Image (tube, rainbow, N blue to C red; front, side):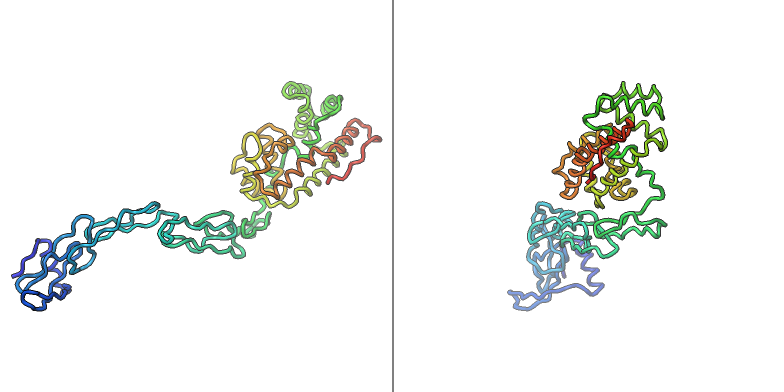
Length: 389
């Protein structure tokens, strides 16, 4: 009595009837003027002909780029949405039973009609709720004991390192933007071969004429051999020889009582450097910028991170300058003069500028004059050391 359009539809109808869930719709037959209960068409099809008193509903499949996603009494299928827009990808393609669904690519969300990038949480804030293709990132301030030192649209706040649990003491107390840094079991990695004051002294730009010979005589009587001295004279120019003589002497000898006045004055100078730099909070980012602002070869990021985690402030900054000098066989005082100051944060820029001025200024010259006289044994004419700051 009823004619179906395909074997496939016959199976669908048969299952629906068996389960007793075949949907129907009301149709008024204009010829017989009778209200009929017609079977709906399944998803992926539409009503080609309504049922009559003698025939069941005749369904037809949706054409290409059209769909129906439910049992229906539609006289035609719906047109699939247009192709996805810029910064969108297709989450679901068009088929006879599904519409095309577009969504923003990773890192973006639908803002009115356009895909906008997810908000990035600044240092001190972490992601409380991850952004989705339909919603923006939600940021929240890091609570006590937590930190975030990155600008990110995905990173939550992290818990501060617990030095006590690790059996270590706190080296740098953490904040909302920095992790707590624990002291390493050994501080040997923070040691440097030559201090900034020693380098400035033995690299002074205008040494006296007898300066080299005085140092040679002094060092050769203590720790250096004639072969070592000759090699330094052959390898380095006259201005650099005092520095490398002292550096070699320091690496080979223990504390010498005859140098006590020199050591004492240099330690006072180093205290002045420490006071000048102060408790500078040198972040990983700023340390990286500083090292990249110096000329020559760059320090490896892992060495920078290790120094910041191991060394107390401001020894971490002094150690980094020492690493740069040794890697480039350079001159720290000259390197500070060539430092690209504009790239540095304001506080760090001021400190580095003052450090360069101190190491090549009047205070260092006064110390230089005094120590020359001490090395020559003429202490009665020693120049009074002025304030280092």
